[in-house]
Image 1 (cartoon, helix red, strand yellow):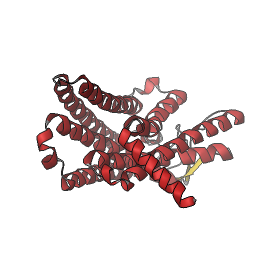
Image 2 (image 1 turned 90 degrees about the vertical axis):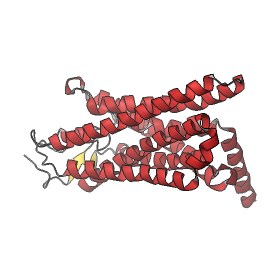
Image 3 (image 1 turned 30 degrees about the horizontal axis):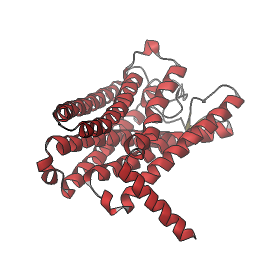
Amino acid sequence: MPNSSSISEFLLLPLADTRQLQLLHFWLLLGIYLAALLGNGLISTAVACDQRLHTPMYFFLLNLALLDLGSISTTLPKSLTNALWDTRAISYAGCAAQVFFFFFFMSAEYSLLTIMSYDRYVAICKPLHYGTLMGSRACATMAAAAWGAGVLNSLLHTASTFSLPLCHGNVVNQFFCEVPQILKLSCSASYLREVVFLIFSAIFTFGCFVFIVVSYVQIFLAVLRMPSAQGRHKAFSMCLPHLAVVSLFLSSAFFAYLKPPSISSPLLDLSVALLYSVVPPTLNPIIYSMRNREIKHALSKVLQYSLFQHQ
């Protein structure tokens, strides 16, 4: 029986059984990955370059775009490489790095989404205090706290997971190194500590979700009291996509990490993992920014400047 000290690499779950389907999945996921890179990259550039977008809302949006770039770049490139070269291997160090960065970006992102809901709550429910509560120093502190929470959470999970003795081979039934799948390789009585960490993370994530929901209940109550129908429509169109993305991520992530082992299957696990690790970073630029008039104006200025420089 191999243990963790004798394992030099892990074998990931292939995207498909046949070579033709592998290549089809490769091109499909490559298109999704490039779309996510382009969307989040354009948002980052627009917010950084346009002075009018240097406000708390767009500052947090810039952070979100950077986290989305990092999260999708943690999982997809290795899977794409394996599909292209028809291999399943990932090194032990590479697997540990995937676990660390995946937890880091996911934890930081949903801490940031919680902060963004607070920003919207203050903007709509306490507009007279917005400048005081959401000053530049307060925004920088909140963003740093979100990134710091990601580092702490990822360190705990990575150290806990890879300190376990692995007694059941090196085959990870997922397209990236996912903690629940690695725990299945550990000795039967040795993974309880990591399960405690996972439950703690789930409680923290659920707490963030409750904070978001409570914030938006207050926002909706304030919006419904607005006399202007146009103002109500604008506020609702800004809030509902945010809740949709948060709900999608949390429901799929909770299902992936807390579902009973009896309903587990490689195809179901793969589908759920793609849903919560690939879809939000790809859709966030569209939901949060591409429908935003100020972002569109900033992007047009960046593109015009870029074309002017090349002439």
